[in-house]
Every structure is written in C-alpha cells, then in structure tokens.
Amino acid sequence: TWLTTLQYVADYAHEFGMTNGDYVWVLSGNIDPATVAYHASTNANISKLVRGMSLIRPIDGFSYLPLFGDESDGFLESWQAQNASFVDRVNALHPINNDTENPGYFQGSATYFQDHLPEHGAGFMYDAVMAQAIGRCQQQRDSKGGMLDRPPAGERERRSRRVKGDSSPRRRGQAVKKSKKQQENLNPHLKGIADSEFHGATGMIAFGESYHTPAARKRETVTFGAYNFRQSEAAELAKDSTYTTWYYLTDVLRGGSVDGQWTSTSSSPFIFANGLSSPPVLNRDVPEQNYLSSAVQIAGLVLFALALSIALVSTVFICLKRKHKAIRESQPPFLLILLAGCIMMTMAILTLSFDEGSGWTEEMLDKACTASPWLISLGYNSIYLALFSKLWRINKVLQFKRRKVTVHHVVGPFLLLILCNIIVLVVWTVTDPFIWVREETDFDSGESYGRCNSDHSLAFVATLAVLMCFSTGACAAMAWKCKDIDSRFSESKWIFYTIFVQIQVLLLGFPILIILDKASADATYLGRVLLLFVVVITTILLMIGPKLFRVYFVKKSNTATNTAHGSQMRGSVGGDVNVSGLKSSAYSIPPPTSVDVPKNLPLHSEGAPAKRLGL
Image 1 (cartoon, rainbow, N blue to C red):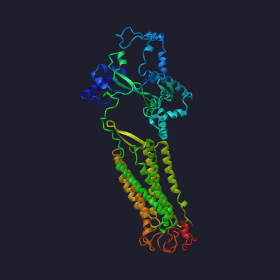
Image 2 (cartoon, rainbow, N blue to C red):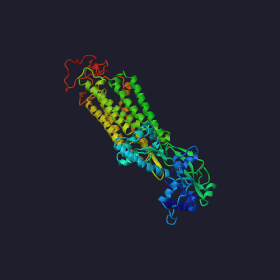
Image 3 (tube, one colour):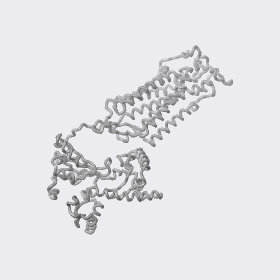
C-alpha cells in the first residue's frame, strides 16, 4: 500500500541524508492527509520526511469553499441538515456492539453530522453513484433516439477548449474525432455515462478527457488542492495534542491542471522543510529540452537569407532582361514559376528554424509545422512542372502541329498535378493536422524533444513524395525526348545535371536524417536546412546561371555548337526560320523527318515560327 511505501521512502531518505531541508517531497493521488499526519506524529523518520511535504490531490467543495468565506457548498449543507432520526436509522442498519469486535467503527451521536465533516472524497463517491444512474438513463434514451438535456453546444465547446490547455481549433477537432471513435467501442452503459453532463457535489461533471480515455472525467472540471504538512498549530494541538504534524490546505487549483488558476487560502503561505516560505535551491539540473542552439540557428538563417537573396535577385534579373534574346528563348513565364517554387522552398527553412527556445508559442509552432509541407511540396513540384511545361512547349513547336503554341496550351499537366498536391495537403491539414509535439524521451532526467508530427503523417508524406517523384520523372522524360533540341531552347543538359545532383544529395541526406531523428535537434535541423538549400541553389545556378552568362558575357553567337553524330539538332543553325521571334537568320528549324509538315506552312517566311512560339 501507499503507507508501506511511505515508510520505506522515509527510512531510505533518512539513511541518505535527504530529510535535511534541502529537498521537497511531493505526494499525489487519493491519499488521506489525516493518515499521513497521524503516522508523522508517531514515527520519527516519517515525521522528518513529511515536514514541508506537499500533497496534491483532487478535493471536495466542502474542503476549500469555507476557506473563501463568500461561497457555500451544497453537499456540505445537505450533510449538516441531517437530524438525529437519520443518525438513529444508520445506527440501526449497522449496529456496533463494541470497538473490540469492530475496530475503527463507532455508534454515531445525535449531532454527528453537525460535529463532523465528510471524509475526503465523499463528494466524488456521491458523484460516481449519480453518474451510474444518469448514465443508465442516458443509455435508455439513446436506445430510443432521444438525448438527455445537455449544456448548449457553445458551452460544451468552450469547456472542451480547456482540455490540456488546447487553444488550437485544429487540435480540438482532431481530439474530438478520435474521442468519438474510442467512445464507439464502449459498452452502452459506459457510453451513456461518458455522454452525460451534470452538476454534482464536486462541480460540473463532464467526461472525455482525451481520445485515449473517453470515459475519464475532464480535468478542467476537477478542483485540486495543495496540502502543506508542517508543525501543528495551536488550534490543532488543542483538539488532539498527539498530532504534532498537521496538514493545511494552502492553495487551490480550479479550472484544470493546465489552464487553471491557483488561489491561496487563509492557511498560506506554504512552509518548506527549511522553515521558510521560499523553496530550497534546486539540486537537480534543468532537464535538457533539446532546443536549437543559437549558433546552429544563426547558421540556418544565414543560409535562408543567402538562398532567398539569390532567388530574388534571379527573379529581378529575369524580369529586367525578359526581352533579351537569351531570356526569351528560355520562356520567361516558366522561369518565373521555377523561381517562385525556389522561393517557397526557401521559406520552408524559416518555418523549421524556431522552437520554444526562441520564444515561440505552441500555436505559432503549430502554424509553422502546418506551413512546412505546403511550402516544400508545392515549391518542389512548381520547379519541375515548370521545366516540364517549358520543354513540352518547345517540343510541340518543333513538331509543327499548331500555328501557334502559347502557355495555356501546355499548362494543363502543371495545373492538374498542383491541384492533386493541394488536395492532399488540404485533407492532411483538416483531418490530421501537422502540429508541434514535445515528447519526453527520458523519464528519469525529464529530457524532451520537440518536433512536428501527426498520427498519419507518414501516409501523407508518402503520397506527397509520390507526386514529387512523378513531377521529377515527367521532367526527366521530357528532357530526354528533347535532348536533340538546341540547348538554348530545351536546356536538357542542365536539367539532367540538376536532377542528378539533387537525387544524389537526397539519397545521401534522407538516411542521415532518419538516423539523427531525436538524437540531436541541431544536427537534424541543419541537415534539413542543407537539403532545402542545396535543392534551391542547384536549381538556380544550373537553370538561371547559363542565361546570366549568355546575357552578360556572350555578345553574339551565329554558329551552332550542338550536334548529334554530325547531324544538326532541332532548333539549330540551318536556314533563316526564326524560332524565338528574334529578327535574326541565325536560328532556323528544319522540320523533323518523323513528322509530316503541313503543306501550307511557310517554313522560310520571315517571322512565321515566332508567331507559333508566341514569345
């Protein structure tokens, strides 16, 4: 029992010198404080251990309401209203001949209910009996399709907000759904109890503390008290001089153990074992919370600033030079989409760069967690789908099947895959939000680790990964198909380089991140930041860099450099047909042998292919 355990703890604490006032001992649970006080008054080791000890337990209204003066307890009033005839009835039902045969029992006096307070927990016992009866009534009403009267939906929602300090609508919705699933597995009577709400002797009774324990009472409806064991004061010694140690209710917690408020009573302040109201110096080291270190966080933010600056400068460059021959050949609308994807992926570095150690609240971290998969997946797919659409467009132009190929002719697959991506993200966000969770990794030391997580995150991440792989594969396939097109139009070589570098980095980086999971917050963060940084920078350098070089360092090029086994490539030099709309005879497009060229298409008329590309 707990009393035997208390004796063991007291003996060992005395042996190891832990009752000298440098430690604070705390009891919790449904422990009778009077029993602790009795043994502390009769056992030397327990007395040393208990002095300055705290007992945290649920308390009845009659235990604390009289201490505030302006509140009364209905249960206590009903208790004290019982008269002598009721006492006689109880004595008749349980006759006690003498204390020898029935130790611990006694005959009640006529004024028993006026002279004695109820036992600790009596109010909870009363509410438990009432919950059984109301739950049975609820069960019968449910079977007939009816419902007992319950508080308005707004009031129930307001109360549920306080469960576990949860202020996030996403968390509440997630908990409610899981709680409903758990309640479906309860037997009808227990489900009736869990569905019931009523005002009892210990306050508002409501169940469904969490989806793990749908039949447990909500913690915000329970009042907790902090008892302080210390030397008996004159009032207690006058009642019974054998009690040299007594318990005093010094603080009351109402509204739940997370969001509730502590209120001091007239028995305050709490007196510790050292005889002072201030606690002793903490002997235990502060638990490691695995917050991001300042140096690593600064390094990540520097990489973020560098990648964002390069992406923004590249965007400005494309906008300013959009009429330049080298930029027009590369189709500026798709280049801007590519850079927008790079910026989105870069912003994901920012959402990963903060935790509680940076002063962010749980709600702020929840929003950052939710935003991260949106930024990463949409950014990555925007990059590769922009490249796919760009290649597909030039390929359609060189097939001579349309008089003019504009952006809207090739944007269909881009929009379709982005829409699928958004649908997955919306379903994830609504049904199983990706939120900030801090888990204790070491019970003894209190070490914890915070990260973004959700119950089914692996399934959603896998789905998004499939979409990302599909966009990468489609881009690679189109690049292979367009490999015989002049690099000034298709850039297949640079796309292959980009895919090759990024796949190597991802194949190396992901296993490392899996190994480092929960092992080091700094290493995990830096690994994620480097992966995002490399993807963004390689994309910009390999796709935008060659264009910048052509704009500023290549003045004029009238000869083609791309050949395939001695034959001209599509879009290379060979006539005076203008592909990009530039008024120059340097870029000509001979019709492919595999495609029948329409007879009415003037292949050698000035400006005709320019209209077909629509640049």
